Length: 171
Image 1 (cartoon, rainbow, N blue to C red):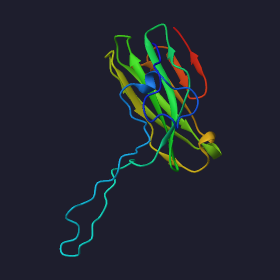
Image 2 (image 1 turned 180 degrees about the horizontal axis):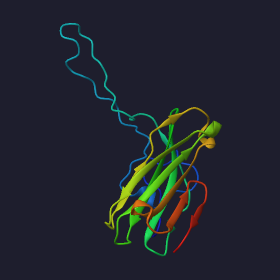
Image 3 (image 1 turned 180 degrees about the vertical axis):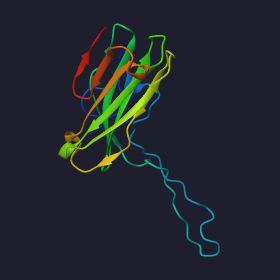
Image 4 (image 1 turned 30 degrees about the vertical axis):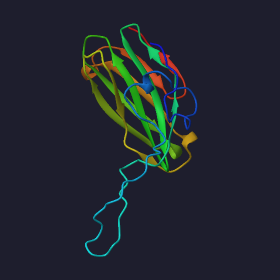
């Protein structure tokens, strides 16, 4: 895998993160203007601005290194912050030829954790998996880890990818 230059709107990012994180995901600053509702309230002459979710807030992204396991799974794990919200996202590509399971864990202040399980299809296409958003604490207090293994816990751990550092485990 080769990381490309940061894309547009990536100025708010910290740490590493070019490469898998650049593929098919927007983490831009959301500088677009909110459209106005030309109708407004009937007869009142007022207009209401509608802002799509997330638009207007910049998103900071802190990613660990891109890792590739000998078996063919590639991953990069990041912690994203937008306003008061923090969440984890794992970018991956599965070239193993078989479906896998992934566990993505977001660890926050006070020992709080959020863990989700993602089914990773047998397609060799870039994709991502992410946790629900959490609030509280500073962004620096959040870390994330993604672990990839065979379906149903069958077989060894193929790859462990973290937002701060990485570790490849092979079979």
